[in-house]
Amino acid sequence: MRILVAEDLYLLRDGMVRLIEAYGHQVVATATTGPETLDALRTWRPDVSVIDVRMPPDQSDEGLRAALAARGETPGLPILILSQHVEQLYARELLVDGSGGVGYLLKESVFDADQFIGALERVAGGGTAMDPAVIAELLSGSSPHRGLERLTEREYSVLALMAQGLSNQAIGRRLFLSESAISKYTTSMFGKLGISDDDDTNRRVRAILTYLNKP
Image (cartoon, rainbow, N blue to C red; front, side, top):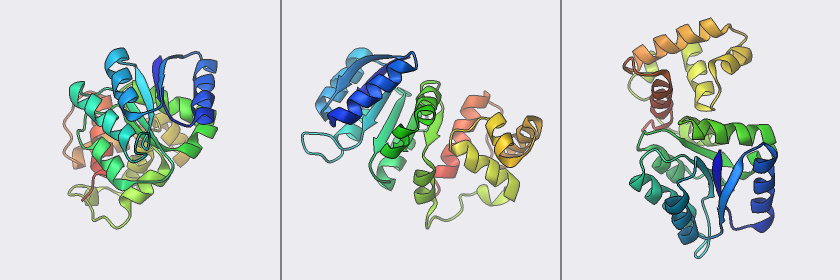
């Protein structure tokens, strides 16, 4: 994969570059400010970008705004956001367009190499990778989305794990069920959520967005 790393802290940026290259991927560019990030996204159109929310010059939301601007110009451009803390507004704003290829991880996730690289690969493939802590924060205090209340407890558990980026096989291992059983649960879940019989990746993204974007 061709990857952009946008992070202003040298040690974290350098560590991510080394980790990504150790897994056989190519870092095509790095950026340390919001404007640099947007320029690099436009120039390189990377397979996936990992971008810090807060970057110079103002250390507010420059990284996120660069990511949103680039996705506005190139819908579905894969972006994995890193943040020190869970920030609901940022997560929801990134997810709202529904085109997939997005992720939101806490920076501490970088220290789990397999988890971090796995998230990059899922997002590059058009999937969604969300930190469990982000999901928990998004769910706090929210009311059920129309259709979610129709899910059984098991279907809801499958959807929650799907939102974490797990495959059917991985969900089956977590719930001690066969992959075919998980497939049946997801098919039923899609029907209850009113998600049409599209390709499986798009259906999964739309189900996850329904789960995460409850009012």
